[in-house]
Length: 407
Image 1: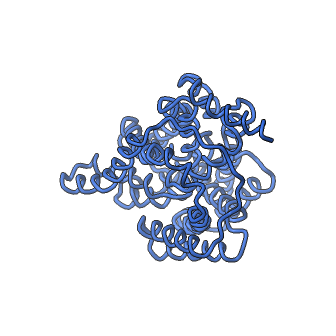
Image 2 (image 1 turned 120 degrees about the vertical axis):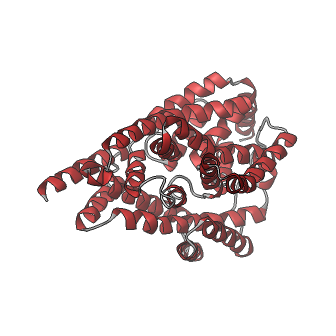
Image 3 (image 1 turned 180 degrees about the vertical axis):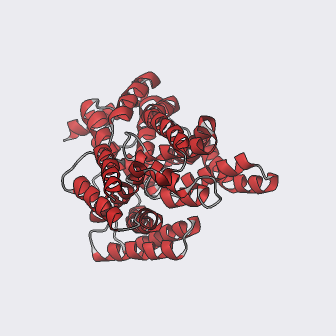
């Protein structure tokens, strides 16, 4: 056992010093092209590739990184990729991991956005309408899976329902943050810390001074961007602020960001709701992270250049938070109070997903029995027949086309 631990420690430490950014880029580019199935599936791909096959880090280190990324706001699977890249090849490795994993999906969503722009009124296109019930099924499956893992008992299930009620009663970023903070406080006071085995220290090649600068920049932009946007009246600053704030305040990954982004771009009239939901449905058909939906939205608004800006804006908070927190996580993760609070936060994430499933996903996508039937079949295929998500999206589009022709 001691020998195995020492080999794992050596693997983690040597991986951080011997890797190259090019190596990291190629490894994650391959995953970016082939990783279908959403955030939970991505974590499985990472474990198989970097723990089992390549040995870049050991099991305990990987579990600790996943725990941190679930605790922080932002896209968990992309944050795990960024963290693995940092541990392997420093900050250049982190950005190489993000670039490799994100680029294929971002390109696909940008191309789809230009296709939508050419179509015009997407509300009149049957196959695009079929993508919306599939989005309902995908979010419902996320709720189903996360509830089983994160709310296995009555106290945490109750906490999840309470978080959903708060989010529905206060449908804004403030409501989400309030639900998460309250759940963390309740978990800290009431939940016993989860038992965990001792693990080796993480090797993070980031100094504390850089970490402090990154954290200061994160909070500075969170406060300063909306002030600057209002003071100048600049549309581009308002756009950057909307996507930065969405990336800063979302817990639970790509599905939970949906209501934040809808309020950010649909409410002011920047993107139509039909185009919004069609793009979200299409995001299920491509590999890689769901946050590349931001590239689609920016492209729909003003072309690929703005799509790139929106993509960087929604990811920037994740970069800054990880750079700021990773050097301190090793000590924090051993704290009993942090473990208890994390259990409460995880339960609230399930509640936020439940709220998102109703508003805006269900209310915008299910207009009648046919839509509900498509969503039901899509859920059956995803949850019980294990059909790949991209194929379910294709089948949803075909089903909507057939139903439209028969109507």
